[in-house]
Image (cartoon, rainbow, N blue to C red; front, side):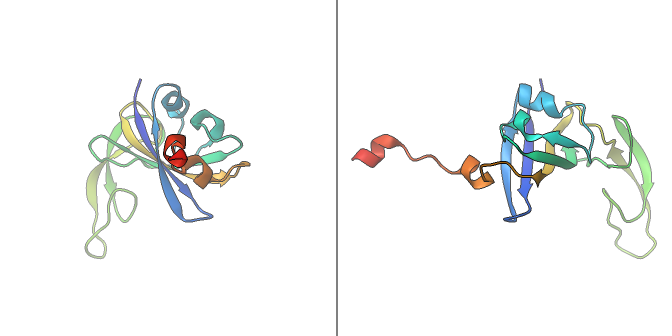
Length: 135
């Protein structure tokens, strides 16, 4: 099974959190597409809805929302995802990944759409060891 790094953005606070998805967590994301909402319970966030906003494979090639299917394609691009021209009217042929998340992806970008009972900071707060508090 693939291991994924999920960069989860919280629009309320403007913070981003890193989530390591392995095993079943990664399996919940593989097969989904960029622009699709997933249930946060699969990632351990009860009551949350999460929107997949983008992804990158192991070589740094980004995924495009408007390119269906899986795999890579070479496209002639103007200003868009995967290419930013240096002069007006410039176009270039670039390799781009399709929108379906596969095991080739390393990083998935996502944002919170619906919130649960606990805040994101409560999930990611560092736990204080009880032994140190007693001393």
